[in-house]
Image 1 (cartoon, rainbow, N blue to C red):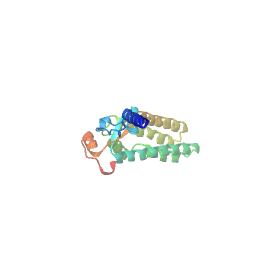
Image 2 (image 1 turned 180 degrees about the vertical axis):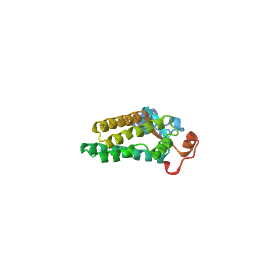
Image 3 (image 1 turned 30 degrees about the vertical axis):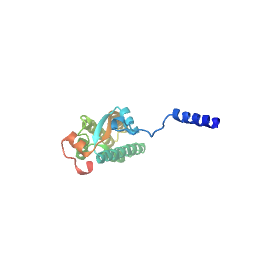
Image 4 (image 1 turned 60 degrees about the vertical axis):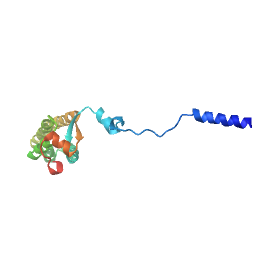
Length: 180
C-alpha cells in the first residue's frame, strides 16, 4: 500500500512539474504578424515602385511580353534580310500617340517613369528607320540601344499594384476604365 501511495505521489509531482501546454497565442494586431513571403521579397527589391491599378499592371505586362516578341521577330527577320518584317516589328515598339498616352497614364504616380518609357519607344523608332534604309549594321546598333533602354527601365522600376482609392489619392485624376 505504501508503494502505491508513493507511486501515486510521484506521478502527481511529475504532472505538476510538467510545463503547461496551451494553444499558441494568436496575434492581436498586424504589427505582430510576420511579413508574408511577398512582403519580404518586395522589401528586398529596392527598385522604385510604379503604382498601378490591377488592370493597368496586367496591361503593362502584356505589352512587355509583346515587346519581347517584337524583338524576337526583329532578330529572326534580320537573319534573313527581311527588312520589311524588321520594320513592321519595330513599329509595334516604336512611338505613337497611343503609346505616349498609355505611358503617361501608367506613370502618373511615379515621377520620371513616363519620360523613361517614352525614351524606350523613341529609341525603338531608330530600328524602323535603319530597316527602311536596309542598313543591317544600324538595325543591330539601334536594337542594342533599344534593349539598353529596356534593361535600364527594368533595373530602376517595379510594379506596385494599388487599389482604386490609393490610385485616386496619388494621381488626383479619375482612372479610366480598363486601365489604359
